Image (tube, rainbow, N blue to C red; front, side):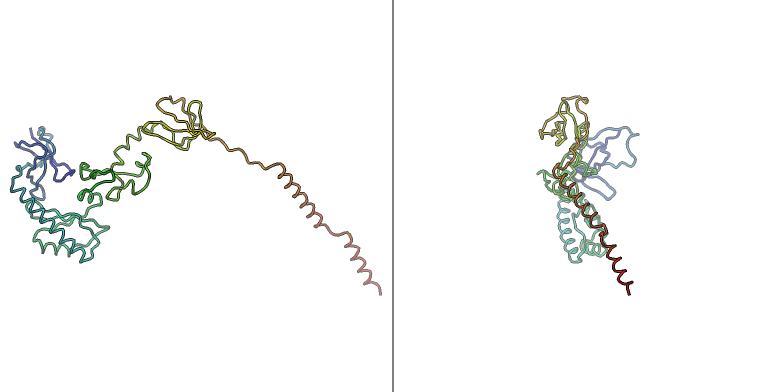
Length: 323
């Protein structure tokens, strides 16, 4: 049987499996582990559990030992070096007018490599910057571009709810979030209200999305006309958590209906009432009809030929024929 323990390198970071061997470990213990990048300090998340050999993945690395006071002193020195490296890198970025933002600097446990995390809109040519950093600190330099969500996870902060950001406190992986989740929960689609510190949609929009979808099943939509018992009208409000809605009747009365108190047969969709046809007053119609008759009579009289026009033309021709 193999004793496997889960560790994390940063708070709310991805969990990794390691072989605990014969070490007695408890959640919160700090240990030294061997990784692809070298030795690192990690924190134990869960106590060791025994698994059969056929379940253990191949290449599982073993925890070396618990941390010592010397290891903690080395970590403190690395933290000081990270602050100095960050200040130097920011100054060089400003001098070269580079379109990038430094987020964090991380030194490996043994100081053999420094990782510079940054954000940028597109690709950045940082070859000259790497030369300056390598010449200054005499160690291997790695530039790693990250997204805005990863930036918020590394930097941390306080959300609009007044609590620490989910991504840097307990959320280990980012789930996709859409505007549909905000619409389903009847939230105002104001970007400042539904966006987090990173500028993206709030991760917490997805926490209750499935619950709202289940509660909305069988409920009418706003704008539809329904008959609830003996009352019919247009649905104007929805209370999803209480599974109730409000109907506005023809006489502008508001009736509150609770879905769970009624059966499906008592709530049926109806057609919207048709507005009454628009008619003109009788006097106005008679006046318009009389005006049209007078106008037609005048046009008919004006279009006819005068009766004395033919006699006048005949008299003119007779005068011309006389010698």
